[in-house]
Image 1 (tube, rainbow, N blue to C red):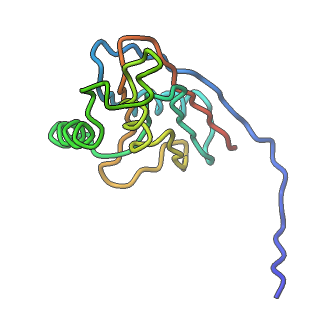
Image 2 (image 1 turned 90 degrees about the vertical axis):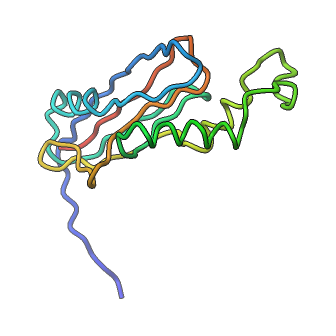
Length: 150
């Protein structure tokens, strides 16, 4: 059976923006949903997709609940899986770095999220929010936001 689809070529719109973060502590979570929502409005896209991507290998973007107890649980769980100290336990730290644990934490939490845009708004499930996760802070890092659609 062959399925034939009519494809229509519309003028696609896009918006590319970068958010910058400088977390004062080594680790932290920031709810960036309001920032992303503003960019969706700025894009004027009614139907499409929004990619939010951490541009550094020791930072993450993920979706979950905005609840402080959960963030505490993440912090505890990640530190149990990949403890920062002793730094000598990691081969990567033989390069003079002390952030091998941050690379591992980022791998667990993920690099990016994609959220549908419906009727000009982020189309979330209940309680969903977008977070920036920092695992090796105290320096500037970027997050890419790419919105495409019509």
